[in-house]
Image (cartoon, rainbow, N blue to C red; front, side):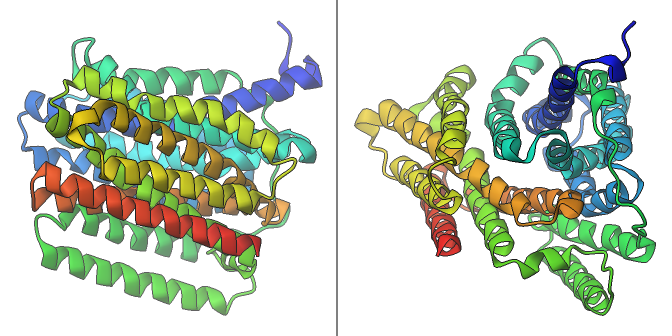
Length: 446
């Protein structure tokens, strides 16, 4: 059998890129497909639907809490070692979740799986940067952005198809398969690490203690506003204390030095706003299609399909445009096109509802395809190469912060009014967020 080291460099690089992209696809698909399975899980395990939401909270809490710590671990002990361990942990826990006998065990497996997903998201782009030539890095970011965007948007449809095989337990099959394929090519990944870098164990432990407070607050906001406010206050105070500590250190745990770059900071802010708009829109869209048009789950999936398809076709074009157009200009254009799509969904007339909704969904996909690749490129190239993992942790945190906040805001609005009234307001608010993202990107160019 031919060893990895004996393979030609070109083939080895392709295997490494495929390993990262399969792992990214698995992590993104898992979150979407399991969200779709929550009603089925609640029914099968005889629990309240509100309780079933803790599967999402446990996963996202571990994911958000693990991004920056695992980026630091990767820089200290090696990107490949940390990444492969994360993929293996993710795969094992996804399989364990599919056969979990009780709800508490399922929650526990999901939380540990979130840690594995954090390693994937924190180190994936850093590994791509070490794998490809500097001139090809923008294209590699495009592949990664296309993978994340495609599986984010297509995840609900894929999840529904998997559940349709007979049980909610099939919802984990896609992520297990993709993660397993990532492990096959993992030996070809570069084994870079920061020589002499020390791990700030105190900062790491403080971070993983503080950040889950915000996620728990999001989980409690609909059950107990007081508990949510107290948890947010605890998290805010803890984070403030950690920032103050790090400001006095030569080697802070938090990647605060990265934010000295205005370009990096503005790119992060634009990303949060864009994903906030995405989170709001993708949560409310299935409800709007069902209530406005009376569509079945299958027809709803068909109307939503142009979103990932538009991302799929737009992203390669965006990568080529980056050779001629400033990244910030493309980000601004993408934010505006996304806002146009969301505005179209806001004012969709009932007489032409299906064509107008499809048009709005396509514009959203085109806008996101224009935005994501140049935004990530600017963010990562604004960071030193030895802090690529930290930049990946920040990028993942920004994406999740925007998505979770957007989805939570949409769910709160949905719970206090009818779908028809809430949908227009949610789409309109998301459009404003997209315009704000475009404005920040334009400011970044100037």
